[in-house]
Length: 135
Image (tube, rainbow, N blue to C red; front, side, top):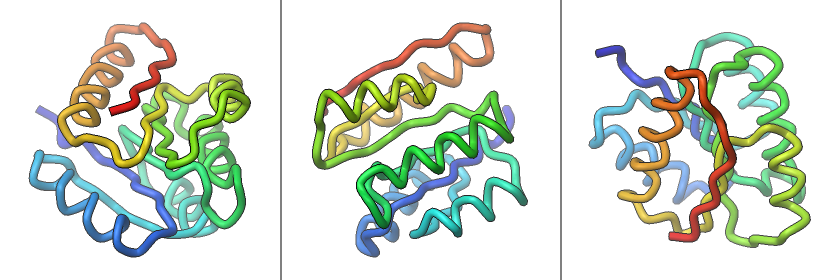
């Protein structure tokens, strides 16, 4: 089975240290960065299967900039947004940006891992669809 490569983007240092460690314990290869510019550099230089990005990186929709860049350069990558401030208009923007799912912080790890597996399976079978998870 191919190693699942994840780009994790969050500007909060504690989350940026903790979440990748947890994801690695679940068998994922994780690269973590804390700014939009660092995320854009990673997207340009490496291939990823999954992007997990905080919505508010530097400004209220910085995560959508990262998602758009990933969609342009790696269209088969599963894109997930994490947010501590769920708002309907942001979710609509996320759908328009072709985000595969939105999770509300603090995300429960079983829900996150389930969503990753579900979206990777859909991607491999040609399906798609936005998923919102609150837990």
